[in-house]
Image (tube, rainbow, N blue to C red; front, top):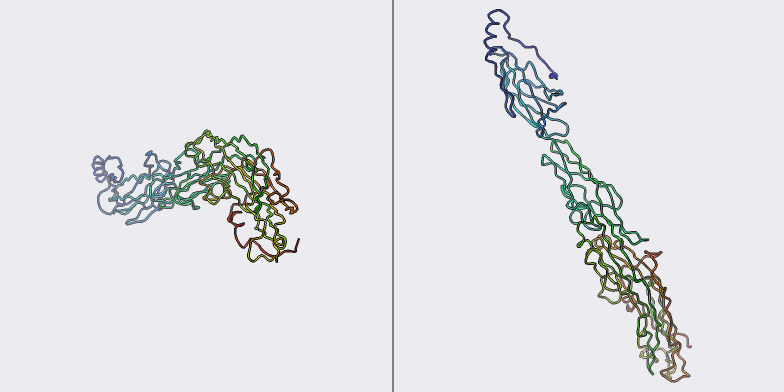
Amino acid sequence: MAEQDTEELAGRGSGPAEDLEAADRDADTLSDQPVDGTVVACDTGTGGGTAPGNLEVTVTDSNTNQPIANAKVSIQGPQSKTGTTDASGKVTFSGLKPGAYTIKAEAASYSTENGTATVASGKTATVKIPLTPITVAIAFDQPVGCPGHLLKVTATGTPGGGTFAWELTGANLALVDGSGAAATTGATLNVLGFLANDNTGEILELNGTLKVTYTFTNGQTATDTKDVKIHGIKFDVTNTTINKSDTLVTETTTTVTIGRRATATMSTNPSVKIKLDASCPRKTDCAKNHRAGCMQTVGTDAFEIRFTDSKTAVTVPLPLRDNLNSTQTKPFYDEPKQFTGDNDTQTVHHEDSPGITNVVTTDPRPGAPAPPPVQNRRLRYITRRMGFTVWLVVQNIEWSVRDLGKSFAYQGNFDWSMGITVNMDFTKTAGSQANPTHSTPTVPAAFSNGKGGGSPTMADPSYNAAANDPANQSFGAAPTI
């Protein structure tokens, strides 16, 4: 395609002598081919002077050497012109004033490149300008991501020096930087995702589409798109039987204790086997990112010690997280068991025996409101009733740092309770006044599947901390009984 602005050629001879001279000059015409970054001037048969010349520009792909059609070519020098290449990648500017020209070539999805040429009077200068295609490619550090673990993705743009903008579609997937903060720019990011099914206990496979747009310094862009997958995990749960034993009342001449028999009031030992998807690329490390354990929440609680003319009570705000003691990894009841590899099985032991120890049979407090004689300060009854919900869970350790509440895959659940009111019969001999002497807890035969209808309480304080807080304890006079 010719340039947008043309001028008539001038200065060519028209007589016989001039024709002969032109023929001689034509014999000396240069036949060199254009070379990248160089200009070859071809004699058109016109003598020196101020006769116009021509400039032919060829634009090619630097990788394939194929011509680029519809490239925009601009020249500046003694004259300024703009043209567009044809199907052969060429554009010719005719009738140019002699002199030095700078050339700028640009095309969609290509780099912008510059060149120079000198147009001589009556001659045609040719120049070839290769453009580098703008490309971008996404690469994953692993072919498949693991639940809760950063899947590193890197985009490489060519030529270098541009910027990257990312998009991710797919439920429960996020783009984050190395610290886990949301991000959508930069050459390297991470895909992160985790979702558990509360009914089945499995960790679900997640799928999405990742797109990056690379913008080169000239404003031209390229894109790449890749599918992304976070593999799933299944679990086999066995030994879900729940055992129970009576709450026992033991008595001396001066104290009463509510506690367990030889075995715990409630106990269970479920086993959990982890089964990673076959596509998992890092099976040992992925398995170690999960641990099994139980959580227990206190839903109901009644705790009262009644003397003849006074009462002690503990009233805590419910529900509360329960734990064996203060050393456990929160929010587990007892220390969880970490998996060691694919198909590893961990057994989770969970037991509890609520009670109260060494309640004295005579109110010992100096400030007790009961007047003499001693029988006005006698122990009359003890009430201890509690209701619980237990969840067997598998926790994704890395995801727990990001979102504790959603880091659990619920394998099973059950409710249980215990309760007893011990009355003191002072018509009997000291040491045998408590009645009843035992109580049977309400415990189901086995776990139910999944999470069930409730949710565990995970925040502080724990039940033990709340019950020992003086703000939740009351002491005082009560109507005489």
